[in-house]
Length: 400
Image (tube, rainbow, N blue to C red; front, side, top):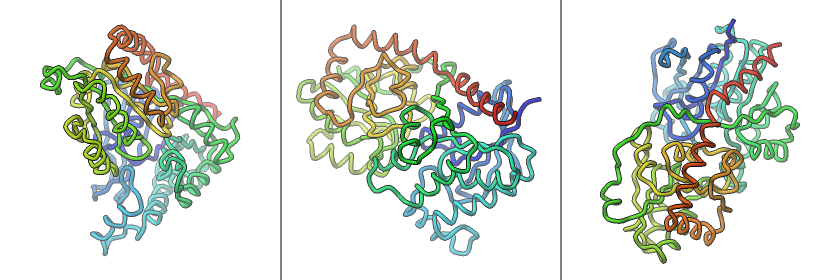
Protein backbone atom coordinates (compact mmCIF):
# COMPACT_ATOMS: atom_id res chain seq x y z
CA UNK A 1 0.00 0.00 0.00
CA UNK A 2 1.36 3.41 -1.02
CA UNK A 3 2.52 5.76 1.69
CA UNK A 4 0.54 8.95 2.17
CA UNK A 5 2.60 12.11 2.58
CA UNK A 6 1.23 15.44 3.81
CA UNK A 7 3.40 18.22 2.37
CA UNK A 8 3.45 21.87 3.41
CA UNK A 9 4.91 24.48 1.06
CA UNK A 10 4.23 27.96 -0.20
CA UNK A 11 4.57 27.98 -3.98
CA UNK A 12 3.68 25.57 -6.76
CA UNK A 13 3.66 26.08 -10.55
CA UNK A 14 2.19 27.77 -12.40
CA UNK A 15 1.99 30.21 -9.48
CA UNK A 16 5.70 30.28 -8.69
CA UNK A 17 8.38 32.93 -8.75
CA UNK A 18 11.52 30.94 -8.01
CA UNK A 19 13.29 27.62 -7.84
CA UNK A 20 11.34 26.29 -4.85
CA UNK A 21 8.16 25.98 -6.90
CA UNK A 22 10.06 24.24 -9.69
CA UNK A 23 11.58 21.83 -7.17
CA UNK A 24 8.25 21.08 -5.48
CA UNK A 25 6.62 20.37 -8.84
CA UNK A 26 9.38 18.08 -10.10
CA UNK A 27 9.72 16.19 -6.83
CA UNK A 28 6.01 15.67 -6.21
CA UNK A 29 5.37 14.63 -9.80
CA UNK A 30 8.05 11.94 -9.49
CA UNK A 31 6.91 10.88 -6.00
CA UNK A 32 3.29 10.62 -7.10
CA UNK A 33 4.09 7.52 -9.17
CA UNK A 34 4.31 5.45 -5.99
CA UNK A 35 3.24 7.80 -3.18
CA UNK A 36 0.02 9.63 -2.39
CA UNK A 37 0.73 13.33 -1.91
CA UNK A 38 -1.43 15.98 -0.22
CA UNK A 39 0.24 19.36 -0.89
CA UNK A 40 -0.95 22.19 1.36
CA UNK A 41 -0.42 25.60 -0.20
CA UNK A 42 -1.17 29.07 1.19
CA UNK A 43 -2.82 31.38 -1.31
CA UNK A 44 -2.48 35.13 -1.47
CA UNK A 45 -6.14 35.57 -2.45
CA UNK A 46 -9.25 33.83 -1.05
CA UNK A 47 -10.14 30.52 -2.71
CA UNK A 48 -12.92 28.02 -2.27
CA UNK A 49 -12.41 25.48 0.48
CA UNK A 50 -11.79 21.83 -0.32
CA UNK A 51 -9.35 19.99 -2.50
CA UNK A 52 -8.29 20.52 -6.09
CA UNK A 53 -6.97 17.34 -7.63
CA UNK A 54 -4.07 17.67 -10.07
CA UNK A 55 -3.32 14.68 -12.28
CA UNK A 56 0.07 14.27 -13.96
CA UNK A 57 -0.39 12.60 -17.35
CA UNK A 58 -1.09 9.00 -16.38
CA UNK A 59 1.63 8.79 -13.72
CA UNK A 60 -0.39 9.48 -10.62
CA UNK A 61 -1.84 12.47 -8.88
CA UNK A 62 -1.48 14.82 -5.99
CA UNK A 63 -4.10 16.80 -4.15
CA UNK A 64 -3.57 20.50 -3.61
CA UNK A 65 -5.31 22.07 -0.63
CA UNK A 66 -5.34 25.84 -0.47
CA UNK A 67 -5.46 27.85 2.75
CA UNK A 68 -6.81 31.40 2.61
CA UNK A 69 -3.62 33.26 3.54
CA UNK A 70 -1.54 36.32 2.67
CA UNK A 71 1.65 34.26 2.48
CA UNK A 72 3.22 34.14 -0.95
CA UNK A 73 6.60 33.23 -2.47
CA UNK A 74 9.69 35.02 -1.12
CA UNK A 75 7.61 37.38 1.02
CA UNK A 76 9.42 39.63 3.48
CA UNK A 77 8.06 41.58 6.42
CA UNK A 78 7.79 44.92 4.61
CA UNK A 79 5.89 43.47 1.64
CA UNK A 80 3.57 41.56 3.95
CA UNK A 81 2.76 44.75 5.87
CA UNK A 82 1.85 46.52 2.62
CA UNK A 83 -0.46 43.65 1.66
CA UNK A 84 -2.06 43.54 5.10
CA UNK A 85 -3.03 47.21 4.89
CA UNK A 86 -5.61 46.30 2.22
CA UNK A 87 -7.22 43.71 4.55
CA UNK A 88 -7.67 45.69 7.76
CA UNK A 89 -10.89 43.92 8.75
CA UNK A 90 -9.68 40.44 7.79
CA UNK A 91 -8.67 37.48 9.90
CA UNK A 92 -5.10 37.61 8.63
CA UNK A 93 -2.17 38.05 11.00
CA UNK A 94 -1.10 41.65 11.59
CA UNK A 95 2.52 40.79 10.75
CA UNK A 96 4.37 38.25 8.65
CA UNK A 97 5.29 36.20 11.71
CA UNK A 98 1.69 36.22 12.96
CA UNK A 99 0.53 34.97 9.57
CA UNK A 100 3.14 32.20 9.60
CA UNK A 101 1.78 31.14 13.00
CA UNK A 102 -1.80 31.33 11.68
CA UNK A 103 -0.81 29.06 8.79
CA UNK A 104 0.63 26.65 11.36
CA UNK A 105 -2.62 26.54 13.35
CA UNK A 106 -4.55 25.73 10.18
CA UNK A 107 -2.01 23.01 9.42
CA UNK A 108 -2.76 21.16 12.64
CA UNK A 109 -6.46 20.91 11.76
CA UNK A 110 -5.68 19.75 8.22
CA UNK A 111 -3.31 17.08 9.48
CA UNK A 112 -6.00 15.69 11.75
CA UNK A 113 -8.34 15.37 8.78
CA UNK A 114 -5.78 13.38 6.77
CA UNK A 115 -4.65 9.86 7.62
CA UNK A 116 -1.09 10.51 6.53
CA UNK A 117 2.05 8.47 7.21
CA UNK A 118 4.66 11.24 6.94
CA UNK A 119 4.70 15.04 7.16
CA UNK A 120 7.06 16.91 4.81
CA UNK A 121 7.66 20.68 5.21
CA UNK A 122 9.45 22.83 2.61
CA UNK A 123 11.49 25.82 3.87
CA UNK A 124 10.96 28.20 6.77
CA UNK A 125 7.44 29.50 6.06
CA UNK A 126 6.17 25.91 6.35
CA UNK A 127 8.27 24.68 9.28
CA UNK A 128 5.86 25.78 12.01
CA UNK A 129 3.05 24.18 10.00
CA UNK A 130 4.99 20.93 9.95
CA UNK A 131 5.60 21.13 13.70
CA UNK A 132 1.90 21.64 14.44
CA UNK A 133 0.94 18.80 12.10
CA UNK A 134 3.36 16.52 13.92
CA UNK A 135 1.97 17.55 17.32
CA UNK A 136 -1.58 16.88 16.12
CA UNK A 137 -0.91 13.47 14.59
CA UNK A 138 2.29 12.11 16.10
CA UNK A 139 3.54 11.32 12.59
CA UNK A 140 7.23 11.73 11.68
CA UNK A 141 8.28 15.12 10.32
CA UNK A 142 10.72 15.65 7.46
CA UNK A 143 12.09 19.18 7.08
CA UNK A 144 13.32 19.96 3.56
CA UNK A 145 15.89 22.76 3.43
CA UNK A 146 15.99 24.48 0.05
CA UNK A 147 17.72 27.58 1.46
CA UNK A 148 18.73 29.03 4.80
CA UNK A 149 18.63 32.56 6.13
CA UNK A 150 22.41 32.64 5.68
CA UNK A 151 21.95 31.98 1.94
CA UNK A 152 19.22 34.56 1.50
CA UNK A 153 21.19 37.33 3.24
CA UNK A 154 24.68 36.32 2.21
CA UNK A 155 25.42 35.97 5.92
CA UNK A 156 24.83 39.69 6.55
CA UNK A 157 21.79 41.00 8.44
CA UNK A 158 20.33 37.61 9.33
CA UNK A 159 16.70 37.92 10.47
CA UNK A 160 16.72 36.48 13.98
CA UNK A 161 13.00 35.58 13.91
CA UNK A 162 13.41 33.60 10.69
CA UNK A 163 16.57 31.97 12.04
CA UNK A 164 14.69 30.96 15.21
CA UNK A 165 11.89 29.34 13.15
CA UNK A 166 14.43 27.48 11.05
CA UNK A 167 16.17 26.18 14.18
CA UNK A 168 12.82 25.14 15.69
CA UNK A 169 11.86 23.22 12.56
CA UNK A 170 15.20 21.46 12.38
CA UNK A 171 15.08 20.56 16.07
CA UNK A 172 11.52 19.19 15.88
CA UNK A 173 12.14 17.13 12.75
CA UNK A 174 12.74 13.41 12.68
CA UNK A 175 14.87 13.78 9.55
CA UNK A 176 16.29 16.64 7.49
CA UNK A 177 16.69 16.78 3.71
CA UNK A 178 19.34 19.19 2.40
CA UNK A 179 19.51 19.99 -1.31
CA UNK A 180 23.32 19.80 -1.30
CA UNK A 181 26.40 19.09 0.78
CA UNK A 182 26.91 22.87 0.73
CA UNK A 183 23.61 23.27 2.57
CA UNK A 184 24.31 20.34 4.89
CA UNK A 185 27.56 21.96 5.99
CA UNK A 186 25.70 25.20 6.81
CA UNK A 187 23.09 23.27 8.83
CA UNK A 188 25.83 21.61 10.85
CA UNK A 189 27.96 24.72 11.42
CA UNK A 190 25.28 27.41 11.80
CA UNK A 191 22.32 25.46 13.22
CA UNK A 192 23.98 22.71 15.24
CA UNK A 193 22.23 19.84 13.43
CA UNK A 194 24.04 16.51 13.82
CA UNK A 195 25.28 15.28 10.41
CA UNK A 196 23.63 11.85 10.84
CA UNK A 197 20.20 13.49 10.84
CA UNK A 198 20.71 15.05 7.40
CA UNK A 199 20.21 13.32 4.04
CA UNK A 200 21.51 15.10 0.94
CA UNK A 201 19.02 14.91 -1.95
CA UNK A 202 20.17 16.93 -4.94
CA UNK A 203 17.52 18.59 -7.07
CA UNK A 204 16.90 17.30 -10.56
CA UNK A 205 15.27 17.96 -13.90
CA UNK A 206 13.00 16.07 -16.29
CA UNK A 207 14.49 16.07 -19.79
CA UNK A 208 11.19 14.98 -21.33
CA UNK A 209 9.88 18.48 -20.62
CA UNK A 210 12.43 20.01 -23.05
CA UNK A 211 11.73 20.45 -26.74
CA UNK A 212 13.35 22.40 -29.58
CA UNK A 213 11.82 25.86 -29.87
CA UNK A 214 12.05 28.88 -32.22
CA UNK A 215 14.58 31.46 -31.06
CA UNK A 216 13.21 34.45 -29.14
CA UNK A 217 16.48 36.33 -29.61
CA UNK A 218 16.85 35.87 -33.37
CA UNK A 219 17.34 39.55 -34.15
CA UNK A 220 20.17 39.86 -31.64
CA UNK A 221 21.85 36.73 -33.03
CA UNK A 222 21.36 37.78 -36.66
CA UNK A 223 23.14 41.04 -35.85
CA UNK A 224 26.24 39.00 -34.99
CA UNK A 225 25.96 39.14 -31.21
CA UNK A 226 27.00 36.47 -28.77
CA UNK A 227 24.43 35.98 -25.98
CA UNK A 228 25.32 35.63 -22.28
CA UNK A 229 22.37 34.81 -20.06
CA UNK A 230 21.39 35.38 -16.41
CA UNK A 231 18.24 33.65 -15.09
CA UNK A 232 16.90 33.94 -11.55
CA UNK A 233 15.46 36.17 -8.88
CA UNK A 234 17.28 39.48 -9.00
CA UNK A 235 18.34 39.51 -5.36
CA UNK A 236 21.64 39.86 -3.54
CA UNK A 237 21.92 36.08 -3.12
CA UNK A 238 22.07 35.56 -6.90
CA UNK A 239 24.95 38.01 -7.50
CA UNK A 240 23.34 40.25 -10.17
CA UNK A 241 25.81 43.07 -9.41
CA UNK A 242 28.70 40.72 -10.21
CA UNK A 243 26.97 39.85 -13.49
CA UNK A 244 26.96 43.53 -14.51
CA UNK A 245 30.57 44.06 -13.44
CA UNK A 246 31.66 41.01 -15.45
CA UNK A 247 29.66 42.22 -18.45
CA UNK A 248 31.48 45.56 -18.33
CA UNK A 249 34.82 43.76 -18.37
CA UNK A 250 33.85 41.42 -21.24
CA UNK A 251 32.54 44.27 -23.39
CA UNK A 252 35.90 46.00 -23.22
CA UNK A 253 37.26 43.10 -25.31
CA UNK A 254 34.17 41.66 -27.03
CA UNK A 255 31.77 44.54 -27.84
CA UNK A 256 29.55 42.28 -29.99
CA UNK A 257 28.12 40.59 -26.90
CA UNK A 258 24.61 41.00 -25.46
CA UNK A 259 23.82 40.19 -21.83
CA UNK A 260 20.24 39.00 -21.29
CA UNK A 261 18.59 39.03 -17.86
CA UNK A 262 15.48 36.93 -17.18
CA UNK A 263 13.91 37.40 -13.77
CA UNK A 264 12.61 39.94 -11.30
CA UNK A 265 13.35 40.89 -7.72
CA UNK A 266 14.20 43.63 -5.27
CA UNK A 267 17.53 44.45 -6.95
CA UNK A 268 16.11 44.85 -10.45
CA UNK A 269 16.15 48.65 -10.48
CA UNK A 270 19.58 48.68 -8.84
CA UNK A 271 20.79 46.37 -11.61
CA UNK A 272 19.36 48.73 -14.26
CA UNK A 273 20.99 51.76 -12.62
CA UNK A 274 24.30 49.90 -12.34
CA UNK A 275 24.23 49.08 -16.06
CA UNK A 276 23.57 52.74 -16.80
CA UNK A 277 26.37 53.97 -14.55
CA UNK A 278 28.78 51.54 -16.24
CA UNK A 279 27.71 52.87 -19.64
CA UNK A 280 26.51 49.49 -20.94
CA UNK A 281 22.71 49.90 -20.84
CA UNK A 282 22.52 49.25 -24.59
CA UNK A 283 24.20 45.87 -24.04
CA UNK A 284 21.92 44.62 -21.25
CA UNK A 285 18.48 43.29 -22.24
CA UNK A 286 15.95 42.78 -19.44
CA UNK A 287 13.50 40.11 -20.58
CA UNK A 288 11.37 40.02 -17.41
CA UNK A 289 10.21 36.89 -15.58
CA UNK A 290 9.94 33.97 -18.01
CA UNK A 291 8.80 30.39 -17.54
CA UNK A 292 8.03 27.31 -19.59
CA UNK A 293 8.64 27.42 -23.35
CA UNK A 294 9.51 31.13 -23.24
CA UNK A 295 12.38 30.50 -20.85
CA UNK A 296 13.55 27.35 -22.63
CA UNK A 297 13.66 29.27 -25.92
CA UNK A 298 15.92 31.90 -24.34
CA UNK A 299 18.20 29.18 -22.93
CA UNK A 300 18.46 27.63 -26.40
CA UNK A 301 19.32 31.01 -27.96
CA UNK A 302 22.16 31.76 -25.53
CA UNK A 303 25.84 30.97 -26.04
CA UNK A 304 26.58 30.78 -22.31
CA UNK A 305 24.57 30.82 -19.09
CA UNK A 306 26.20 32.18 -15.93
CA UNK A 307 25.13 31.89 -12.28
CA UNK A 308 27.36 34.11 -10.10
CA UNK A 309 25.52 33.33 -6.87
CA UNK A 310 26.99 34.42 -3.54
CA UNK A 311 25.46 31.45 -1.71
CA UNK A 312 23.35 29.01 -3.72
CA UNK A 313 21.95 25.98 -1.84
CA UNK A 314 21.56 24.19 -5.15
CA UNK A 315 20.63 26.11 -8.32
CA UNK A 316 18.35 24.33 -10.79
CA UNK A 317 18.88 26.85 -13.61
CA UNK A 318 22.27 25.43 -14.73
CA UNK A 319 20.59 22.05 -15.18
CA UNK A 320 17.84 23.75 -17.21
CA UNK A 321 20.43 25.50 -19.36
CA UNK A 322 22.41 22.31 -20.08
CA UNK A 323 19.18 20.44 -20.78
CA UNK A 324 18.53 23.06 -23.48
CA UNK A 325 22.00 22.64 -24.96
CA UNK A 326 23.74 25.72 -23.53
CA UNK A 327 27.01 25.50 -21.52
CA UNK A 328 27.20 27.03 -18.06
CA UNK A 329 29.51 29.00 -15.80
CA UNK A 330 28.63 28.67 -12.10
CA UNK A 331 29.98 29.87 -8.79
CA UNK A 332 31.92 27.55 -6.53
CA UNK A 333 29.57 28.72 -3.80
CA UNK A 334 26.71 26.55 -5.10
CA UNK A 335 25.27 23.11 -4.50
CA UNK A 336 24.85 22.33 -8.20
CA UNK A 337 28.65 22.46 -8.56
CA UNK A 338 28.65 19.14 -6.67
CA UNK A 339 26.89 17.34 -9.53
CA UNK A 340 28.44 19.13 -12.53
CA UNK A 341 32.04 18.50 -13.53
CA UNK A 342 31.67 19.78 -17.08
CA UNK A 343 30.91 23.35 -16.12
CA UNK A 344 33.13 26.38 -15.77
CA UNK A 345 33.47 27.27 -12.08
CA UNK A 346 34.48 30.56 -10.45
CA UNK A 347 34.41 32.36 -7.13
CA UNK A 348 31.52 34.81 -7.39
CA UNK A 349 33.71 37.76 -6.42
CA UNK A 350 36.47 37.15 -8.98
CA UNK A 351 35.36 39.41 -11.82
CA UNK A 352 38.57 38.88 -13.81
CA UNK A 353 38.16 35.10 -13.74
CA UNK A 354 34.47 35.34 -14.68
CA UNK A 355 35.24 37.63 -17.62
CA UNK A 356 38.18 35.50 -18.81
CA UNK A 357 36.04 32.34 -18.84
CA UNK A 358 33.15 34.06 -20.60
CA UNK A 359 35.49 35.29 -23.33
CA UNK A 360 37.19 31.90 -23.66
CA UNK A 361 33.84 30.15 -24.14
CA UNK A 362 32.62 32.69 -26.68
CA UNK A 363 35.90 32.58 -28.64
CA UNK A 364 36.57 28.83 -28.64
CA UNK A 365 33.83 26.69 -30.14
CA UNK A 366 35.63 23.48 -29.13
CA UNK A 367 35.46 24.48 -25.44
CA UNK A 368 31.81 25.45 -25.75
CA UNK A 369 30.95 22.18 -27.51
CA UNK A 370 32.79 20.07 -24.93
CA UNK A 371 30.96 21.79 -22.06
CA UNK A 372 27.63 21.45 -23.85
CA UNK A 373 27.87 17.76 -24.78
CA UNK A 374 29.42 16.45 -21.58
CA UNK A 375 27.32 18.72 -19.38
CA UNK A 376 24.18 17.30 -20.98
CA UNK A 377 25.32 13.76 -20.14
CA UNK A 378 25.73 14.78 -16.49
CA UNK A 379 22.26 16.31 -16.41
CA UNK A 380 20.80 12.99 -17.55
CA UNK A 381 22.00 11.46 -14.26
CA UNK A 382 20.17 14.07 -12.16
CA UNK A 383 16.50 13.33 -12.68
CA UNK A 384 13.64 14.01 -10.30
CA UNK A 385 13.04 10.26 -10.24
CA UNK A 386 16.42 9.78 -8.56
CA UNK A 387 15.58 12.49 -6.00
CA UNK A 388 12.13 11.00 -5.38
CA UNK A 389 13.64 7.57 -4.80
CA UNK A 390 15.88 8.95 -2.05
CA UNK A 391 12.91 10.71 -0.41
CA UNK A 392 10.78 7.59 -0.62
CA UNK A 393 13.55 5.52 1.00
CA UNK A 394 13.72 8.06 3.83
CA UNK A 395 9.92 7.92 4.31
CA UNK A 396 10.06 4.13 4.52
CA UNK A 397 12.85 4.26 7.09
CA UNK A 398 10.87 6.69 9.27
CA UNK A 399 7.68 4.65 9.06
CA UNK A 400 9.28 1.31 9.81
